[in-house]
Length: 267
Image 1 (cartoon, rainbow, N blue to C red):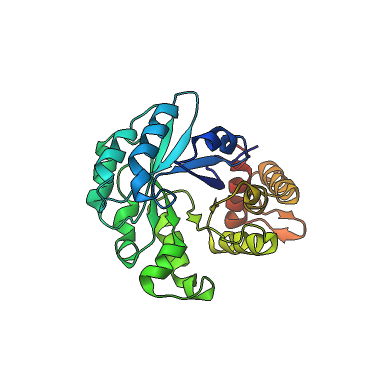
Image 2: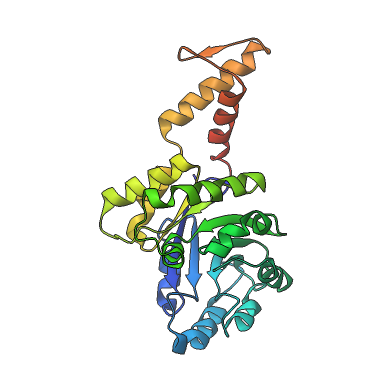
């Protein structure tokens, strides 16, 4: 059973319409059809047209449009209000005016890719804009923008800023960036668990092979859910009195954690 907010987001290039339905069947919580990085400049218009002809109210996808500083942005906005477009992913988010353009075009939900110094600088303002529902860390582009040579401890500070901004804006926990090593399950699992420890609630996937490991890392385990149910049962029968579960005192923070774990079982 999926959580209320997706934990796995799977990219598929907009130039490969034959893969769209396959991506929807790959087990990811949300498919992102990509008009940006995965599409060469010469193919932008034809990819957009192919996507537009495929969209329908029977399917639910996200679309990563091109950034506001490109010549394709205005035409991409025409897709925002189309049936089947559950959310718009805005890359290179940095200026609130760009968010306003996406909202004005009819986007139901907007996810912002934070992948530049400007995005980090304006992150609190961006996170609080109308219809912004989640932040996404575009870690690879961010490293390029900042001149950072590795995706490890070098990004700890920025990951924490994204989690903090999400919490202050009362958004869902943010989405962590991609792991480029498609066949390295150990690296993928390590990256996913690191993101979860930092307070991220989901991760981007670039191949269907990655979906199962991301789902496993971010969804509650059977043991965690069993613990949460014991906590809720004990608290419910204690009538406000102090109570212990598994030899540990159940106070308000423990109760909140149990509630959040169980909430992930609800759509």
